[in-house]
Image (cartoon, rainbow, N blue to C red; front, side, top):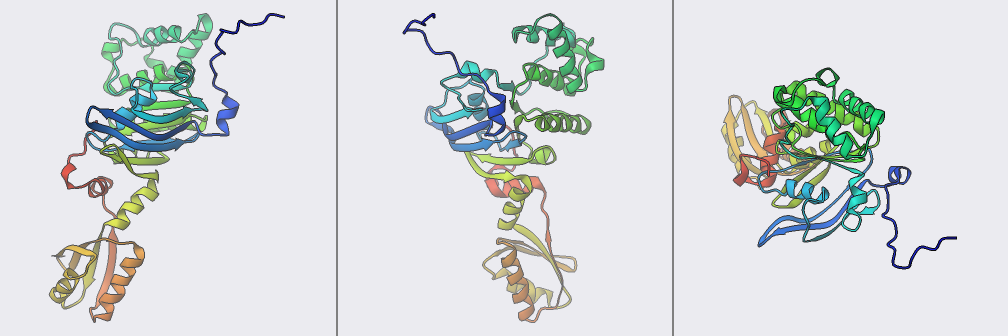
Length: 338
């Protein structure tokens, strides 16, 4: 029997697919990133399960890109814990790289290489050889719907096609955690639809996907859950319908039709503690209301009790972008990426 020397380091832990399917792919605890006196990520905790597509959205300086760069092992955090499929990201980064696929914003495609040559180059770097390498390149091209573009040079690709080629490169080593920084940036609606379908297929195969964007509506039909970041903090996260409903509950626009005494109703509503920005719009009164659905029901009851003839009382669903602005504050009307 051969006895290993006492000084030999234990082998690096490897990704166990069977174990990962029964546990979170990604767990972040109390992550913080400081740049000097500026805190980019502030006490972030998050868990992603297999099959989850999580959208991270926020304005300039929200901390999205800093978070993704930490997860991709490109940036060392100030402190915090990150585990990927049970592996400590900071103690076993090489093993974690087998699991993680990272697609940065505006990643380049080499203009003088054909699409298949570009992917073949990276497949070789991942250790694929011979027939297996060719087959893997073809599989990834099929996955991103670009098999018919395999002989096109990089310089001839549209923005949407270039993004899909980079996604194909990201998929070569079959990662179980995908980190996609602004993958839909610059894509037209058809290209975004194609991206959504691709991500849904990957999630159905068991991958966990973290997608960042500066446009919440861009993620609304793509993600199973969403998190809203602002100034490094995760303000809301959960299933996207639940997050939108929670924000709406805090500030909803209500349209009320009153058959007579409209001006008196405006005066009464203006004095209500949960009501703001009351105005007359044709035959209706429109206002901003803070409170949940029970508070809205109480407002309607009180209006009727005051003797106002209410013929319609309709909460209006705000746009997703306006909801985001209302949550993060008026100082960021132009919601941009970081």
